[in-house]
Image (tube, rainbow, N blue to C red; front, side, top):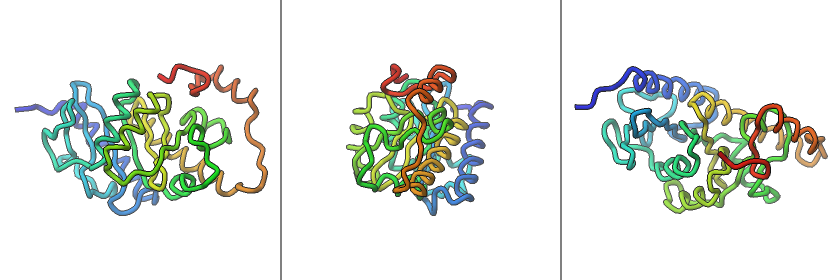
Length: 225
C-alpha cells in the first residue's frame, strides 16, 4: 500500500489553496482549468475532471504514475496529454497551471498575434516570469493533437497560449507557475487596453539588460531549458 509523504500532503494542500485563490479572483470560471505538480518520488498530482478549482478536496486529487496512469483519487482532467507533453519537453518543469482566464483567451483570438511571441516585451516582470509566450492553433479540449503541438515547441517556452482556449504555464515550483500565469493574464490585459494606441514597449537594449541581469531565457537568447 502506498504511503503518502509529508511533501505530497503539502503539495495537495497547496494545489487546493492556489486553485481556490485563482477561482475566487475570477481567473478560471466554473469547472474550467487544471493544475498539476510533479512528485519527487515519481508520478504527479493533477486536478480531477469536471472539478472547480475553487472547491478542490486534497484527498480526491488524481495521483498518476510516471506513465500517466491513475493510481488513486478521482478521474483526472482530460488535459493530461497537454500536461504530459509539457513535462516531457521541458525538463525543468515541476508544476503546470492551465486556466481559461478572460484576457489571455481574448489575446489568443486576435489576428495579429505572432505564434512565436504572442505578446511584445511590455514589462520587465512579464519577461522575468514568462519569458516569451507561444501561441498554438486551436484544438478541441482534450484532443491528443494538442500534445503534438506542445512537443513541436521543443521545450523552448514555459508559457503557452492555446488559441480560443487559454494559457498553459510551467514553473519550477507550483508557486512560480501560478505567479507566471497571473503575470501573463495581467500583461494580456495591458495589451488589450493599449491596443491601437501605439504604446512604448521595452527596447531591445532593455530586454538584453534583463536577460543579462536576471538570467531571463528567451528562445532567441538561450537553450530553452
